[in-house]
Length: 287
Length: 123
Image (cartoon, rainbow over all chains, first blue to last red; front, side, top):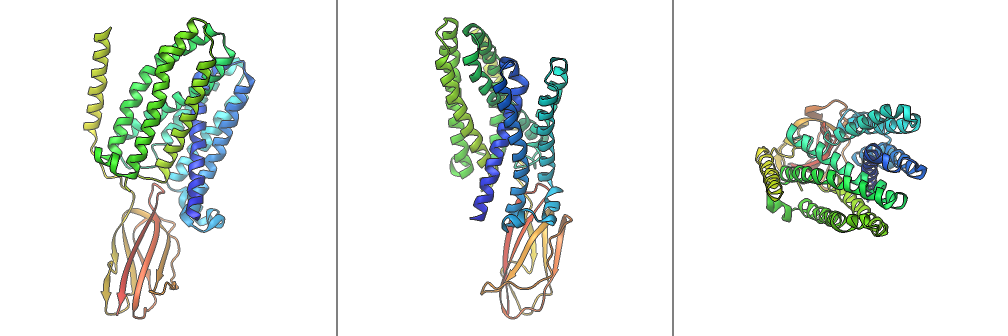
């Protein structure tokens, strides 16, 4: 029972960290779409703040799960110091500092004269968090190639998922012609990104599972198949956007259906993040 | 245009194959216990003086318990190891004839929690 609680806290913290990471990518690459919208900015800051808190909770959940002695175990000074000296501590430092600096940049450098400094800090934070994923988990014990693939994979995932909320908001704020330009540009970038994401994902899956049989016979493999099915759904929606809903914008047919479709994409993206958190915390490829 | 797309697809497939072939399929290695003394399922004619553990990589031990067949925990001088070590030895009190189970919780530099268990009998 106790392990179930610690595992649940770990998984939920991870989902918030992933959302914060994607939100950070959204701030960096897509803030210009809704740059006059205060509500969007407020939500971006809230997500980053939650991700910062979740990074701290994640560390204490790891300590608590190690001790298996309730809250007292999670706050054990000796165990905290032991865990702090491992990759878990390094990852926590990377993430807490990155989210804190990103928040500070959003609050302090929002004026246009500071825009470059703000973007530089956001980019540095994004890269540091992407790097933190390579320090822990099953890829951390592997070579530079696998780490480079994971780094690329998480960065593109953040870019993709981070784009969804700004694009969904843009559907109700931008004029259809403007929205068409934004969506068409996003579609062009997405084509290259999806190809890279596919190659990196294929490499990572092979490096973790080793053979096709493990994909079907192990619990990790089966959950990975579910994740791939969800990714396939999102890709189908992306195809629908590209060939039906975005061309409709050009003919001034309204953006309500596109907004609805992006909202569905956001729900699927959340499920993918949840599944990824479970795969990387509770189910390992070695089981 | 179609030729361009076909060439791009071929390039993508080629790159995927190169990356997949390039992997050296290392073991997904967390730390593990590679050796224990007494060995698992050992039958001893006298009480062992120590318990010794050897790890595959430097590890920190969080918990170590020794229980008899009834599940009663033995008093030992175990304290969590703050420094990462490969070999660990714990002195034992004199054990009466019984079957004993040792449970160890430890982690390596990756901070991943690992558990190991082994038993031995004292005649």
